[in-house]
Length: 232
Image (cartoon, rainbow, N blue to C red; front, side, top):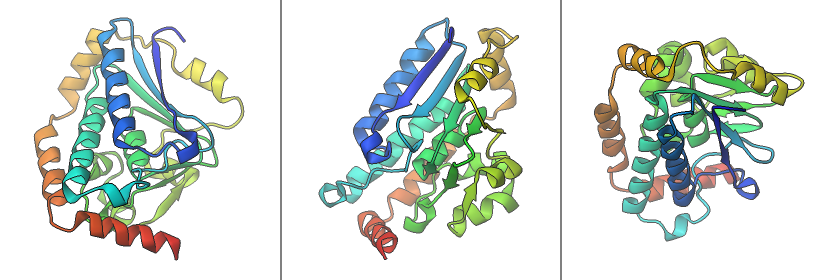
């Protein structure tokens, strides 16, 4: 699709979980797409069954509190780049959009999902404050609270009702995307100006909130306990 930069989460064997390298690659892809003046839309998609199963914990034993903090900071910077992008942003979720994947999904303007998609935000289980303000901006506190503090999972219908998803797509997803992502009426410069005028820039505050939560000693141990709870 002309003008649409499709950025694939491409680790299907890991459920597209976000490793440090994957976040770096996504950040570079976003920067490259935005540097192209012909780009009017960023589209995020996942290879395989899932959009993104979250923060990659497969090498947790080799991590320290410090390396984990650095990974969360890099992830937050990626999410901020998408949230404040001067072009239209879109994500199409299938299967799980959990944790970091749900945060990436919710950072986009058009948030479409297949009927089988589910969203979950487990970060508070290990003490991380990541994306919460953006989530509340989308859905309001009453709808966001069970997701960020109680570990609730939203299916596609619930995500649509809460405003986390903008569309549930049944049938031919490719045809839907081609139609939905036609060039916008407004120019890229106008879109950027609208974004700047309507979306408060709270990047420093959000990064500071994340950094405080990620700097509390024992981050790796908290994540280990969370991972063990999933195995029970």
